[in-house]
Length: 411
Image 1 (cartoon, rainbow, N blue to C red):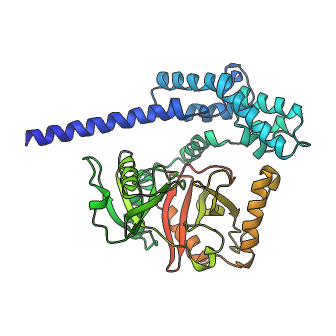
Image 2 (cartoon, helix red, strand yellow):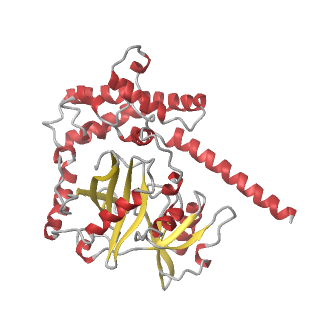
Image 3 (spheres, rainbow, N blue to C red):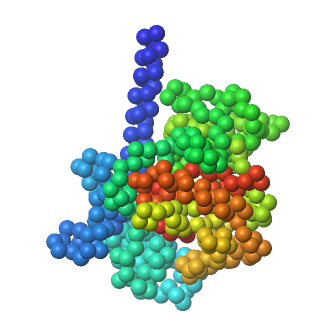
């Protein structure tokens, strides 16, 4: 009895330590940028309101850390960016842009890129995304990807309502249970595996289905997630990013890696509705992102888009996503609004996908997606905006999850 409790406590302690070290590793080794626009003018008294707004976002991002530790981590990442990572990223990115379109990227554009990236920690791809090479003085007008989580948190704080169920949104197991009670079509969870103890072997789970998708209970961005299907020779699969898992041993390794992150939920690997399946060359789920937000006292649609998995031109074992806006009123798929923000190769790819979508006059089950997303958001009065991820199958729409840290740009 005592021995069993001791082993459990030891394992839980080890898991907590691993999570802390993993989080620390993400903040120092894997993070390229600080948590926002960070520059010397933050220290200047009387700076304008736009600078103060970005400074507020940066400071908000560290509220869950002890401030002294967080500031130290930010300085490490900041100096590494301005002296090492940033210059290399600017030169590499600019050379690639210049190779694609020499006329639009003369040498002075590199100087603008370096000034924005090194003085304010703006990543090169978002310099082009927001047209800052032509309008560099407008850089304070935008919210950038590395400060978007703080932006969402700040907007939610200003609602003045404490949401007692806010943790449910990030917990896919509880979210599925709670929203199912409201008759919202949720993607069924066929197995929940707790990883407080050493997890069971994947091949010994005795799953009812032979084609499944595994992901963490509370993770996001598909970290560690993978699909697996059973063949005559055993299990094979593919990671969320597209890397193949060619043997049962590789599937087992992906399973153990996923279990180290969090508890795991297993779902059916959904197939696309026939109307949408022609949009992709891959046998991957096409998702609809429907973003709802509180507009005064009412819930409204902020943005809706179609996320289509496509083969990466640079790496055959990697999956990219082509994203097209959807008109929330008519559900018609729209062309990419600002093609000049994309590379020439990606422009061709997006145009190809849009041409394929020409025959789709209406997204299937659109009214149900809207109505269900609105009802789902009513459970979270303290959260300003939520991105709901849907998959549409031949049996109808299925809600996969809701997210609060969604990016502010489509590309």
